[in-house]
Length: 246
Image (tube, rainbow, N blue to C red; front, side):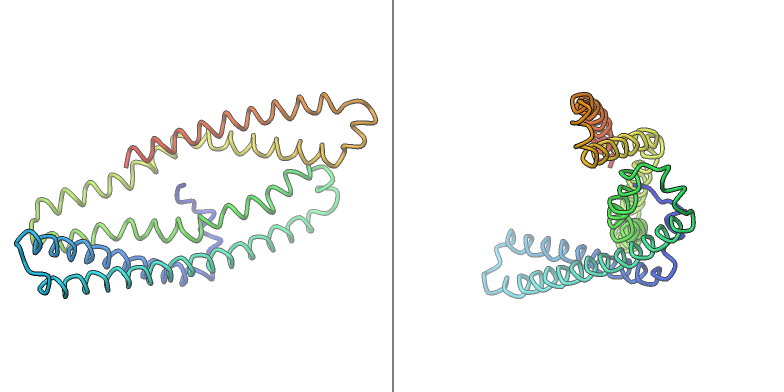
């Protein structure tokens, strides 16, 4: 995924909720850093040969931090689902109003499969974008600054290296996805073509059998499915490569 200004324009009215998700995510990230620090402290005490009684309080502190982090992560997830649901509802309404304003002449010239794919599956896939990707994008950009501010007091050169590495790992996948946008569009077009042909075949199954064209329709669906398979595998491969970059 990558930041898209056209999709960002649809977040009017829910940007406050996105900001809340970012704030919750930042708190969860801070708790994650504290958890790691407490676990490191606990392991250090174990290697120093501290008694079990002296390890009770560090264990309790670490457990409490883990519990709090879980609570904040759950809160962030629920806020993300609610935010994406609001945006999806607005998008469906705007798309429906646009289709109605275009009139039956326009819809009559369009393939029903493509319309269904856009109105249903296309909007459903945006749940991850609005609910998780956008807040996580800001969290990923702000968290390195928070870690840098903390580590800089301990070791400035190491903190600077961590900051540069964090921003490289954030920017490199986005640059790769922009380079590979054409393949993603090809996959979307293959998906739309397959869905349209499949739905048309189901709706006209009786007619196809009456005219003896079910075999040719089957061959067409095989061709569409192979094109979808090939384009999907390419997108999965590039996504795996982007994970390797990070």
